[in-house]
Amino acid sequence: MRTLTPDTASAASRPSRLDPERGLRLNLLPHRSLQLGLTGEAAARYADEWIVGIRDVTPPARQIHEAVRAGRAEEAGRLLPAESPYPVPERLLTHLGA
Image (cartoon, rainbow, N blue to C red; front, side, top):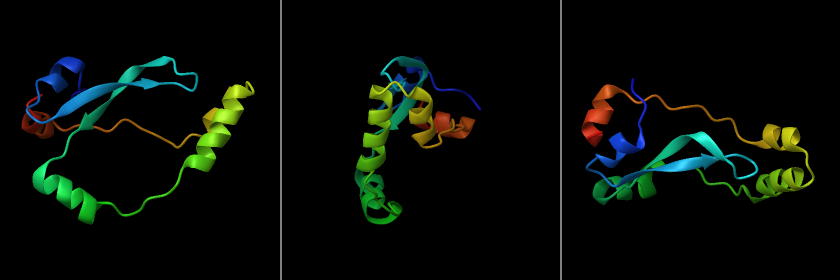
């Protein structure tokens, strides 16, 4: 497994970009998120087949915002959804041209 960097992601032949991640107070974090653009069949299948559910996250986002504004950062952090890095196999990086 390798980690994508701005250099390897920009070399990809597919529309992609690495967006900076931000903390609760909008501070830059030391990692980025990979965003891939879907076109053609992939875009159609994503919309028609791969989406299994949609939910409104406005209420928890408001709770998190309220906790941050009130100085309750630990509480706000506990309200965030769990996230973990996604491992990227070498063959996928090769396919992306990274």
